[in-house]
Image (cartoon, rainbow, N blue to C red; front, side, top):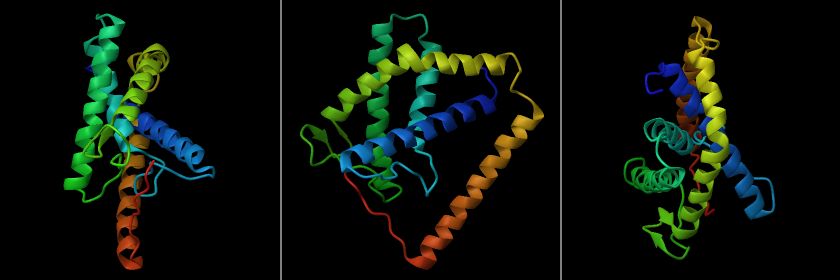
Length: 187
């Protein structure tokens, strides 16, 4: 499981990033009573934090697969909440952007995590464990059976990342020329 090719991990990361973007878009749309695109990175339909979180869940699932489900959900939840906390610090201190701000909510820690969102993560992790985990097991089987691993898939993934890199570079150039700034929106 942990000896899968890099294309598998990239696939898992991209699926989770897109899935996170969909979740953020739905959440923002419901909370604001109008359609809003949320959680995008550099105007792409990706939320990388969800990609890292999903990939982390996959790793933990592989390592802890023989443990009781309650233990796994507790470990998964603590890991995801910790990831959100440190990602918030990283974005604020290193990238200079506050991607989310829970400081107006009760029971928050530095505005990076809060009790309400942490409880939501526990339910999301349980949903992953009981439902989504099987989807990723299926993807893993595709890779193990070498149905998906071909030179063409590697080329497609490499091309997608080169295109993504080019789009990010273009976005940075356009932002600089047009003077566009990111606005912080509370969720």
